[in-house]
Image 1 (spheres, rainbow, N blue to C red):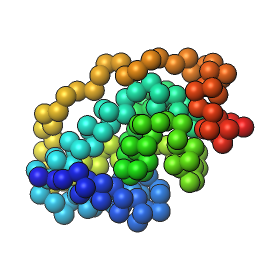
Image 2 (image 1 turned 120 degrees about the vertical axis):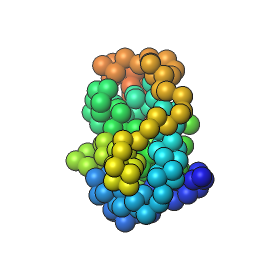
Image 3 (image 1 turned 135 degrees about the vertical axis):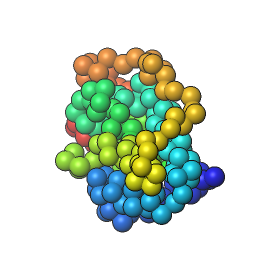
Length: 173
């Protein structure tokens, strides 16, 4: 059984080794997961998926919209994977107060940051390499159909600037 602290340690050590590059981090994560048994890889997947689902929130989508200069459904999915890849402090801080990403993110390079699509597949890839089979259902609650919270009009820049004053000042000002 993988503890939450072990999950975050894998995330942190792979991010640091990849020097923040999410694609490199995903490759390193697969390598690390391949050193574990298949059931532990599924535990990692459960930790990842439950956090991914928790981040399905309008407030966070709005923050990603400001950071990325727009965020489609897919872009927000990949942003949530990337956010998990940033580690526990950034992830939990962003969930608690999305505008705090203005301080939580020391560097943000639009070319590579904000898209952690490959991180979302790391556990599945490792499981398949270990077992030759597709990962089974994880047995956790599915993501909500709609994001949690109050919908935001992403096209209303004045509203976004009001909701995310620190992010707006840093990334749009």
